[in-house]
Each structure stands twice: as structure tokens, then as C-alpha cells.
Image 1 (cartoon, rainbow, N blue to C red):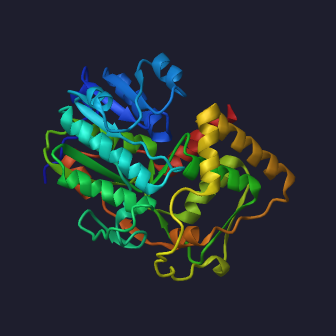
Image 2 (image 1 turned 120 degrees about the vertical axis):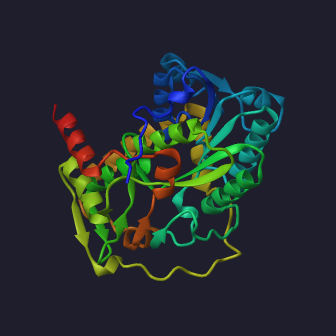
Length: 363
């Protein structure tokens, strides 16, 4: 069998082209902006406010304050762009609010003759997540758009029915520098004492942020037309025990305990009376971020967690029920479609990255 040629520099076809990015100040967005600028792209970041704009402009991107609402300003921002990278998702707002922002953006992309949309979705849209074989042909059942999963499913459906060429990226567990959920969180957990995992612990389909960026660049510069979904995961097959033990090594402390007490119970039936929209804490967090900026709020939260960790007696954390179900899951995620269609080639090994980070922290 002839070996498939893999472009050593993903996104070369974008060099010199104008591209637009939402979510540019986020964890994945910051890495994508850096990669696009290194390619020589003319990068415009759409921001809700000026918070984060100075850093983007200093790096070489254009920062445009343009809320994702219908209107000529949004259409003009996307007019003639070679690609729109849509990474933004406001976890402090409801799924419905995020879907409304997405609808405005997708319409503006169509009206402004944007060449392609690269949309960041998630592997959680599949009914089988987080268990069993998962490919792009697995069933996806729509649900209430107030939820994160429901909103992501609805966004995918909008693209499948739309007029723009689009690549829908569905990453799994995205980790790396700046990841609040899958890097900063586990490190803080280890410093508080560790974690208790189900017996037996499940599989963790982890993918480094740079591999997600690679997939985004390949999808944007691919000659393929139409709308395609691409599952994106890393080169490793590792368990959650290995995942958290890596962070224990990086933190220099923390226990990863296996205990049947952490085994999940079956999920409850859907509750149509459940409250929708962001929680009171989420609303307060959103208000603070508008006043002082996301990074300052997150820095204050990190400081508060570190103080709490120093004062509290170290002990392993028992995950909530959603966490237990995830940590007991046995997903088998295939990236074959992304490999075949856009030459996606996951490169970053979790263990090698942990060792790299350990050496850096020891300097």
C-alpha cells in the first residue's frame, strides 16, 4: 500500500489570506492565532469587548469589537474571508443564546461570501459518547438547545443545511497549556490531594491543543467542498488513571485512587422541568468578566483555589456523577475520516508532553 503524503506544514494554502477567528482569547483560540500568524495570514479576531485586544494586536492580529448579532457590521467583517474559524462558546450564557450568536455568524458568513467555515464542535454530540466505537456515522439525536450538547448539535445541523463549505471539528478531551478543564483543573486537583476514579477506570481519548489547531488548519486549506464532520483525537490510547497520574507527576504530588465507591449509577431520565440557562454563579461570573476581563477573573479564581488548597487537608476528590460516568466510559474514537480526507496526523503524545513540561518546570 502506498503511504499517503502528509503536508509537513498544515495550512500552507492560507498564507497571505484573510481569515477571521471567534474565541481568539480562549485556550484553543490563542494557539490558533499564533499558528495563523506564523503562516503569514491576515488575521482578524472578532471580540465581544476590548478585553484581550491589546495582546492580539501586539502579536500581529487585528482585533475587531463586533458582537455576534445580525447586522451589516458582522457581514462586513466576514466579507470575502478565506476562512472563518468559529471557536467561541460562552459557557456563562445558555445554549440557546450561543445558538443565536452562531446563527447570526453563519448568516453573515453566507451574506459576506466567506469561503469556508471551520466550526469547533465536540465528540459529545454522539449518542454513544463516552462508550463504544465512535465514528462520524454514529447516531446524533437532537436535544434541548439550552444544553451545551443540544446547542452543538443544532449548530452542526445548521451548517449541514447551509450554503457555505464547512468543516465541523469534533475534538475529544482537549488538554495543553491554558486548558482550564483538562490541564489547570487536574493540576489543582492533584495539589488538593488527588482524585478517586471508578473501578475499573475507563479510557481517556485525549488530544493536545496543537493537534486540534493542526486539524483546523488542514480543514481550512483542504480542497474538499461541502460540509464534513471530523472526529479529532490524539495518537495515544490511554486510560484515565494514566491521564491523572501524569498530572500527579507534573505537580509532584497527588493520589490517583481506584475505588468502587466512584462507580457511576445509570443516568436519570430527561427532566423537562429542569431549569435552563446559566446558573446564578454563571451570571455573576459573566458580569465580573465584563467589568474586569476574563483573565483577571480567572487569575483571581486560581488564586482563591490555591489558598483553599493550602488551607484544606489534602485528600483525593470524589468526582460528581457526570465525572464518574465520563471516567468509567470506554470510548473507541476513530480519526480515520480526518486522516483520509484532510491528512490529519495527530503528533503529540500525552506522556511525552508531560515529561516535556516536567523538564521545563525543573529549569
